[in-house]
Length: 268
Image 1 (tube, rainbow, N blue to C red):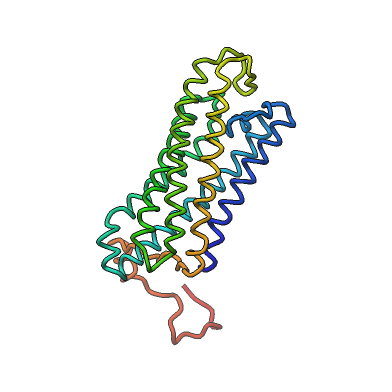
Image 2 (cartoon, rainbow, N blue to C red):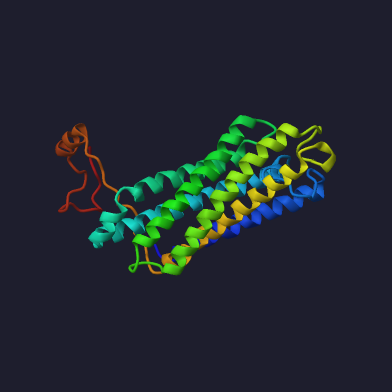
């Protein structure tokens, strides 16, 4: 399988299109106010929620494949270079599972709207941004260990910077989000006005969420150049022979033997 760089590129384009598209649709439909809603608030009501959930689910699959390719790439470098193997150690496999956990969180956020299942939605958001940030830190550290075999120091610095941004704004979004909901006195959080209370905390939280989501997308696209120089073979498939099947195959007599005439009728 070649052209693996299309996976991170597709994730970036699909997520950005979904975030912006559902926001525009929600504003046009009057489901949210145009002043800084949460990303998930714009996908609370149909038809935006349907489109958002479908595209995000597709994006989660593509993101999971991207994370797996990155894992295999690092694993190959660990096999070839002993110094990489000593430095990376178990970080690669840990990063794989944390990355998959983040994908699961994104899917939960998309499919469990805040208005329907609030607790599940918040758990998904924590898995998405929390596990995703940890995954980015691990990848930033591994990027330095892969020098000079893969990527560049500039790209490692960019990933480190994006990890710092995600960490800071994830914390800001979480803290200000809790405070804003405590101070909220309105009737509908999807249509949050300055007179509803907690407005400035709400704006700080929503802007921080958008920054984190954008940084996530930019982080994933940094894998594009490195994926251009690798290819991935299909996973091998092996049959598991069961004892009964072996006995059956030993006692089996073919109907047509190599010396038989294929045009001759079979008499049983």
